Length: 337
Image (cartoon, rainbow, N blue to C red; front, side, top):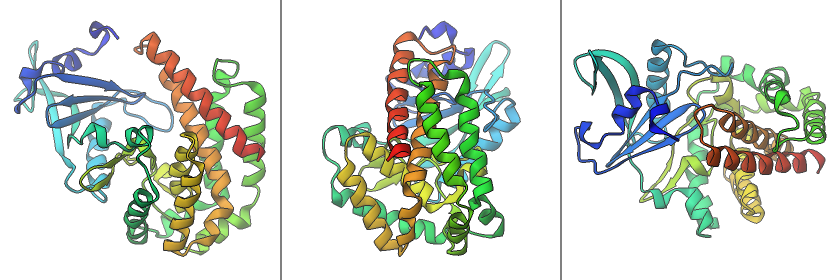
């Protein structure tokens, strides 16, 4: 992507010399909602001023609020990783990082993790094993046990509440049917399966009764796990409580789906079996296929959003279409299993 298409303050942050710590090169990574700047030993994550309905970062005040939320919530699992809030300021035509001028945007400042230790890269190298998943389970079980599961949060586990998230995905992707990633037949099969499952209200109620609806992570998959000197599970959902307040089954189904996506079905099965045993949650498996389908569809949707973002270059666009196609195919397999 041409640098000239970026906001001026992002262009400013691509300059190594502006940082108060050693930086030889700045790398920019974009998602559909963030600019992520890798600068020396640190990462600066800035929210794009977008409104997708399920999130709204369109004002400076909202972006600051959700940066602060990101820090608080992610420190539950990664207290040493999330360092604080950085401010991009402007004085005249000049920008500064944590300067004396007027704030133009905010960034979550994080310690930079070793890129080669990211779980997605470990998967590509064939290095993820049952012992890796044992360690992840050992982190997750006490996390969920401590997580808030009060009356307000329980309400998000009802079939009615879950349907808001699930059906929203179909509404937001209807306009993409017929694009290189999503066919009408796939859309019909997946949406029909999801609607039928949502009719099982007693099943959702039993999960609430068992105390399985908690303030979870919300985005638990390999891109948000680092297998370094210790395991870091980072980048939880901060922008919308209804994606984070969910059945634990929905959270762990995301990682199980991700392992399936990477062709690691035996490890996916092991992870779920190990988690169910450690948490005493044998009924989780009744929800697993439904939530795997939901999670795969969400990933496909995000791929479509990124592919259609105006600032994304053609290579990235085609890559997003290809990945979204794989996710929708996986969601269809769950729906028709």
